[in-house]
Image 1 (cartoon, rainbow over the protein chains, first blue to last red):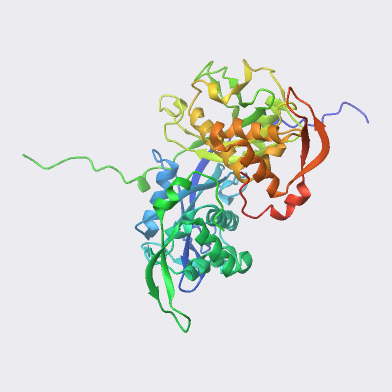
Image 2: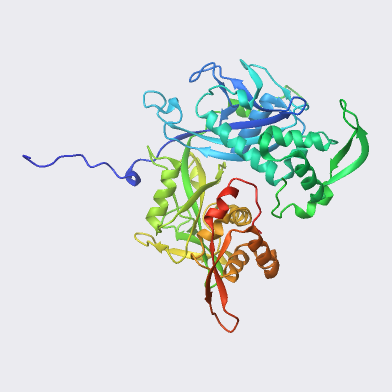
Length: 248
Length: 248
């Protein structure tokens, strides 16, 4: 080959300029419709580009002076009225190229998303539709193609929910105060799928843990025998709070 | 009071301008010195302001075109040579005011930190000291005041490590291929503290799980009876991989 090789040597990554970011917060808010045994996720219809008119997880961009958690609570407060709220950080997706606004002919900065996970009691949660093109509790099984990488965020959130049901008493934050063992079983089946356990094993396991207390009240539903109503005994559970434990 | 009240009404947060961010990645890299039963964390001495000459978790700022995970692996590759590497995202700390560089008389942009968790085998890990003022495996119990909010990150990482020992077979990624039950017990005690379980309960529990296979080889150490060497049976564990399980 004639002449010197003028092939351009790529700049090593640690000598590239620093990336500039906007930071978004996206909430994966779950609820369980215990009457219909459906796991639901809160979606809003986007009313601006990109992804105009796509369903998306409720989110916002972090403002000056605002913490990530404050931003997550701000979204909640704008979309939903609820008494008890359990919110925890889920995962951070940082691209590059996860958001079309990152394109150099658009804003040219990176968009990072810190996602939060929430679980709310369906009967208590009241949606706020002000100034939103659409808001809905969507059955997780029927969620369409969402804006951005939100289907991936939802998958991640669903996995966290399953883990929490398996390792923590989070189910009792979603059920009414008094419930039958069958209500509890239906909740687990709704989230974990039909084949996670048969009812009699599940029942034996949960009773053996010693955190359920029989209220003495019985309830009749349909044709079967009256069923006992139970309560979660938070006091009995307290000593196990920080111990490794499997619920099912 | 005379005149009108001219008290300034604060701007609601959702009308504040968007915050601009640089994004850092900080790694909490643990190792266990099984010979001395010490839990160690990798620290580097900072050689620039802010926090000049403070120990800190190894970290970097994300470059243009670089993903968060790529940045986390880049730090690892710059500080340590290791064969097997387990890395997962830990938590995102987003302030505001977590970094002195955020001050308006400094750079004026926010500094967000996405932290990653790693666990490496002590005997295999080789530190790289090039161009670093200092690098050390620090016993977790003796860690000094670190730069930024890194003590908080470390606490978070330590909790994750405890959880992983309790719920997953991560211990076997740190132990040599063949180990005595006492080696395994020492490892758990080093991470979880002296009082997590007595040896005979621990031994019974681990053997009952059925994931340990006796190699038939015995080893003599000190004055006691020769002890059997065990291996982790990954094949026996495979069916339980995605099931809820408590190891200890």
